[in-house]
Image (tube, rainbow, N blue to C red; front, side, top):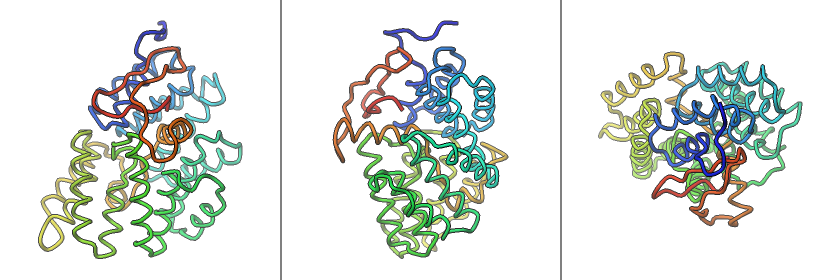
Length: 326
């Protein structure tokens, strides 16, 4: 089977474009599977990153783990191996296997990782430590990181630490700054990083009920555009708390739990309703390339550059395209 050549759409870039725009999760998954079945894409780190990120964010955790294992067996490229290990760490985090997640992330940090995925590793490490009841350890890891503090994933990591340490006002500020940065670069999908859901939690803790209700509604609207049941279930958990006069809507809670359980029986749904990190290498690259090409805080161009596998990237109509390969 020949890989996509010049002038043809790369299925991995199609998947990533749909993912960051938050549109048509079924088409995104189909494109990601096509990419991972294509020899040219499987040998191209950027394509592997896009495809695995799409599968993970779309809740296709079994498929993502299976593809990651196959890529690790191939060991065709050191960067592909790094991305496959990162994907396995994310699957472990999202299924509640915190020990395996920690071991995989520790291994990546020990071996050294490329600069573009360091923020991803940092955020997941912070998430893992907080989930294991070690917020001070998470704060130590965060403070030791020497990266760009305006990076959305570092802002998200800071917000997680602030919330875990009982500082919801600071957490809310960091979540909103993270959301502004992601939105300015066209990352609209709550399945990539549910910053509105987290900001809702922080606003609720601060007693800012009007802002909390607004954020819950915006998160649910974005999740509905994406359409994937797990994202809808997570957003409904916020709507349930914000929507009813007494602060809790049991019907919405029931729908939320049903969606989360139906979509992935192995999903750690209790933790999902509390706090989750749903990010990808795609986000890290989007931010880095956007800053270098367009400057801080400016929207990216809607023109799509060629994918490094040689194919043409697809831009989603009426949505900002990713400013470079994910």
